[in-house]
Image 1 (cartoon, rainbow, N blue to C red):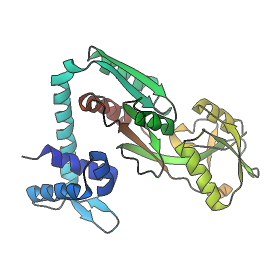
Image 2 (cartoon, one colour; image 1 turned 90 degrees about the vertical axis):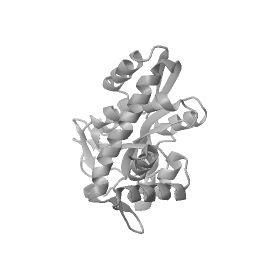
Image 3 (cartoon, rainbow, N blue to C red; image 1 turned 135 degrees about the vertical axis):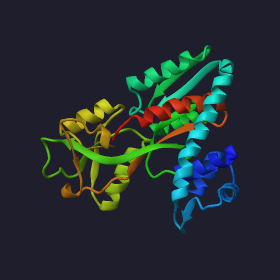
Image 4 (cartoon, one colour; image 1 turned 180 degrees about the vertical axis):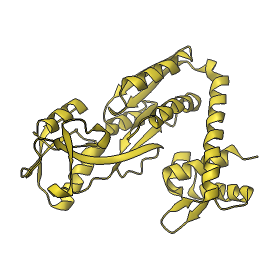
Length: 284
């Protein structure tokens, strides 16, 4: 029989891309995480990860076990939530970035809440940096959003390219300095855009400061400013700019789920499954 804790550590190492991040996520030491993986490999009798000095990749046996591990952990969480749901009372405060604030997710959360009498879900929409700050201040229980090149611990959902978006009718020689449409600080897309432009020696100016994706799209669609956004947000009338226009590549946006240390672990695990299923249904 597999130890659930060992499977949980195995999944965390793969999702977080390393032992150090997995240790942070699980609130364990790195040596403890290594010990868990070693014990799991001893139980299986086969290596699960092919390790190098810089990374680790799943072996064929590791891939097979990973599929079972995710299923076992999901069933474990579902069973626990089902048998303890009567204990859920009070507010569940969820922070979501705008990429997540759509009707489908809200309907899923509404259906979820209906199964737990006494539970009230409150949603706050903002940029990830602000939401994470609120969570650290004890004002949010769960945050769902994206970061770029960050070691912030969280459950990996998916990632997609961050790109430069501009009007499809305005492609040509870009203005100098480059006009940008940006979210206010602290925004991972803003930080990535400014950093990459500085490294490339490209001068820029903030032509429009936006508080929503609607404003960001309007600025790009009008050709008023170039906007960094995820590829899934590049809608009709917009195009991606890149090396052909002299712009540097941007890093991927990493979508993650974060939970407060003092949040109810049972209700967090249950709502996490709702969000993970929602994320898996999105196609980029």
